[in-house]
Length: 333
Image 1: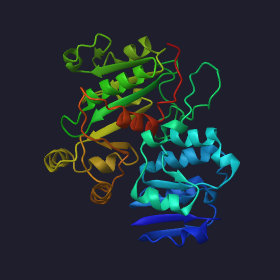
Image 2: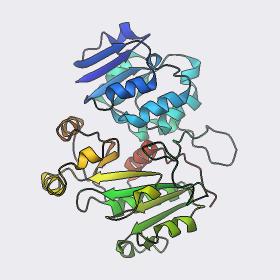
Image 3: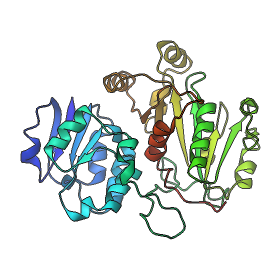
Image 4: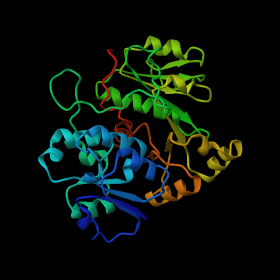
């Protein structure tokens, strides 16, 4: 079932031949829409951008996108030079919003054929940090879920620190940490990968990978404070409070899910509002919607099985853009 939010394009969108579970019309603050839909289970959302108050201020759309699953959102743009400007479209992509169009035909197409990053990469202007032009990066501040500033008292160089943590056993945090590091290196970024309380990195044969324990993590973060991005494989005991953000990996097989729920039946309740990623997942969009309904949680990203010997750039770029990391230019390394 789908959600439609309209304002100026209400007449057009009313002719869509789709099942609708909720439809609202008017002009809404970003916080109003977040409150309405952050815990509302839907298949796809069609957002008439004129329904978002002060939509020309990209920060309002950014706030909206950070709280909802942008993979499920189709944005109907006003057909104006301002909203079709390369910089505006690039900023949408930086927030992980790949499904946007100016007309009803485009909405119908995207309902059946959602875009990936590869489909919109030609529109993406990535700032090189050198002041040579291009769009300014749109990146969320480094804050925790309560909105209070983190890490600045530990790492003064401005690094973005992403924690990667398995919820189900062997969900792939170590390999994902490594692959994300390698993907950013391809883009010429200064990046470090650290694992906590394990020595699994030794089997990857990459001398730049860092292993430490939970007591030494803060010191390692300080040591590499000039890197623009630091990925941390938190394993079981890594301190999430030291991270700018954390993603939680869940392998959605019945066996792994049942084992996790037996350990802690309230695990999804405790992680409400966190970024949950389905790892090694072959679930369809319909499967994910059912999973969200049954688990009473939201899925941030659906990550398919990856072979490190193959090119995983498309899916990794999708994840990095969804997280806002591709355009993050903090650090000085």
